[in-house]
Every structure is written in structure tokens, then in C-alpha cells.
Image 1 (tube, helix red, strand yellow):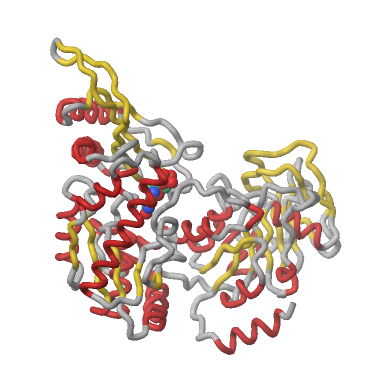
Image 2: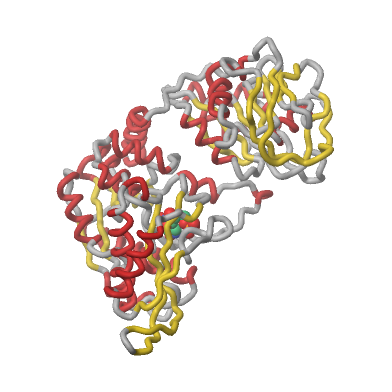
Length: 528
Ligand code: XMP
């Protein structure tokens, strides 16, 4: 491996990278993305790479440090993920977390062993005197979150034991530029975790916290100009946060060589098509092509009940509509999408992680192979909260950047079973009530995402003096930070009561309302 050569060749060829970066190596922990988010929150750019990524994948980032995530394996398991050779060979500062610590201990000749008892949950560490830069400015006793089976029994030669607990003799160890900790600084249950991560980035790697929305915009605009050249870009505008921010960003880069196309697919919420057109007219200084494709989507969905088949049908129909619009307004070279980093991470995890595909999000999964465009995805390294910050920095109003997420296949995945026009109308009414009542309850009770779902079952009821046999509607409301995990929102009973009462009175045919109290995992946020 020729790290020096590759790195210096990259440095010589690449444009000056204005922002400092680190790389996070993913060993399969459920918290790997959280590490990446904490690093970004500290103002330092990072990318998450699978543990089997080659140095050539990492070098263009010109990282100033490397963070090793936790993982479910034991370093002694046959086939367990190994420390990539380039980690130590790079000469960069390294910070191992949990499994990452154990890999470092093993690599430098320490001893890793099964803990006498597995440790999951809160613990208190004692930090040795003579403060190491990782713990600078922090007290000597820290509450932390542990989640491990193995631990480091003996630190390697040349490493100082910096912290310990009764159950983890080496809760933290450090040498000159290499440090490792047994606990998880990335989770909220380690209250000072963000400071520990910041200490690594700033005190050990020497990173400047210059990853800001403005620095992103400058770089993204330059990159879009370079990628697109003299070409023209077609953008599918859904009116959601991601495609709106992508539109504003690309427009800043190439002005009217961007043509945003809004497709009314008939799967939108009540009044949404008008709202999108109206907001766009007020806040974007560009012409919007608006296409009425309601009939076409409905026809394509007719008879489909399988959730994946429905998603694919919607994704494919979108592309076909775009291709036709491209022919009448084109030619176009690129199709722009608001794909985000979590989607990208999910589709590039290590083979060994064998991440099972849960749903085909149409941003990434449902595109037909014979598509006639190149893809332009300027937000694909951003998390959702970063997209919102970029949107604000681009001057977009709250009514766009604060919108709750809405899936690309729209109401098609909120009507379980076949999608029909009468059911779409019914769901739209129920959903409008759910949203109106939750919004009327004020910002303190507003969950991260909330909507109605129409179920394909009927149940018996009584209205007036008559027996009814009507539809069932589920209310879904979740608290989440990034949609990766979610908990059901504790909506006040009186809000639930008003929702239920209004739906059975105002949405004809729905006679029963249920509230979904599942978290993700094991459920997902959407029902399909
Ligand atoms: P799940 O149901 O997977 O949803 O827990 C996670 C988040 O993603 C949204 N979602 C989608 N967004 N295209 C999108 O752009 C899709 O196909 C799609 N499916 C789900 C969902 O609303 C939630 O916020």
C-alpha cells in the first residue's frame, strides 16, 4: 500500500479543500451514523466508510483523523471485521470507540477478553489525573453509556490507561495520537460525549470547525458548475424540504439552465399541489413546469397491492413523466434529486454487514435501469438537519424548511392495499384533520411527523340507531431526529379525542380510529 504517494498525488491534483475532515470507519454499530452526526455537529466534515473500504476511497477526503466505530463482533471471532491496514499506516490520529478500542488494543499488542459480565447501560468512569487532551475541560468522574461484551483487559505497551470503571479496567487508553474508549460518546446517555468527540477533533486532530451551511453552499455551487458544465438540469420538485433545497442550490449554481418540474401524481395531501405551486411562485425566482399526471399514476397503480410493487410503479412512472417533459422542454443532461446521506449510507454498507433492504425509497431504489439522464444529487452527503440549515442559509422560508417529511410514493404507501380514487379522497380528508388538530395544539405538542393511514379492513359500529360496517383509519405520530429510529409521540388525549371525533363525523365511511403506538424498530414509520 502506498499511502504517502496516493495522498500526495491527491493533494497535488485536487482543488484546495477548504474544510477540515475526518473519516468514520463503520464496523457495523447501530450508532455509526450517530458518530458521524456528532462530528458534523462539532463543525467538522466527515464521511462514514465501510470497514472494507480501500484507502483510495478515503484519500480524496484528506482526513485529519480517523474514528473507528463500535460493532457487534468480538475481535477474536473468525471473520470479524479487521482494522484496515491504512488506519495505522496513515500516521493520522485515531480514535477507537468500543469495538474500535478493542481493535486498537489488539493491533498494538494489548489484551482483549470477554468481560466478566456484559455491560449495557449507564456507568461512571474515573478519569486519571494529568488530563489527557481527550478529556480536557471535563471533570474526573463522568457518567457514560456502555454497551459491550468484550473489554480491554490490558492496554498495549506505550498506552496509558486514562480511565477505568469497576467492570472495564481500560475504559479509556491513549498514546500520543491514538486514543480509544470503551463507552459510547455519541449517544445522548453520555452527557459529555459531544465534548469528548470535539476534544478529539480539535485538540488531537487539530481540526478547525469550519463545516457550516455557508461553506457547504460555496463548495456545492462550485461542484455543480463543474459537473454540469454547459449542460441543462431537470429537477423533480415535490415541494418537500429536500427537493426544494436542491432546487434553490442548483439554481444558484446554474440559474435558468435548471428546469424544475412539479408532477401532481394525485398521491399528494389535501391542497398540497396548490400549496407547492403557490410557495414556489412566491419564493423562487424561477419558472416551474407543472404537470398533471394524476390519471396516469392511478392507472399504473390499479390492481397493485404489494408495497414494493406500488413503490416501484410510482418511481418508474415519475421517471417516464420526466422523460416526456425532457423531450418537450429539453434536451437535458441531468436529473437532479434530493437524495440524502442516510440513503447513500444504506446503499453502500460493507458486504459483511449485509444490510437487509427494508424498503425501496424511490429516491435511490426505484429508478429504472434504462433511464436517459445522469443523476445530480447535491445533497447526498447531508443529514436532514443539515439540509434544513442549508435551506435557511439559502433564504428559504420556514414554511418550506420546517415541512415534515413526506414519502416520494405519497399516499400510495398510506393506503394499505390497492390505491383507488375514492380511497385517496377519504384518506386526504382524514389526514387533513390529523394535521389540523395537531397543529392547532401548538408547537409544544408537534411531533416530528404525523399523518393518517387508511386500513383495508372494515369493522362494525353504530351511528344514530343504525349498525355501520365502516373503514378503519390509523393515526401515526412519531418523535424522531432522523427517521432512522422513532418513538410514538405521546399526543395529549384531548387532541386524540378531537381527531377521532372529527374523522368519524367528517370523513364519510370511516367509523373507527386507532392510534399507532409502535416504535421504530421494530415497526417502520410508514405502514408500507
Ligand atoms: P420508514 O417508513 O422507512 O420511513 O421508517 C422513514 C422516513 O422516510 C420517509 N419515507 C420516504 N421518503 N421516499 C422518500 O423520499 C420514499 O419512498 C419514502 N418512504 C418513506 C418516511 O415518511 C419517514 O419520514
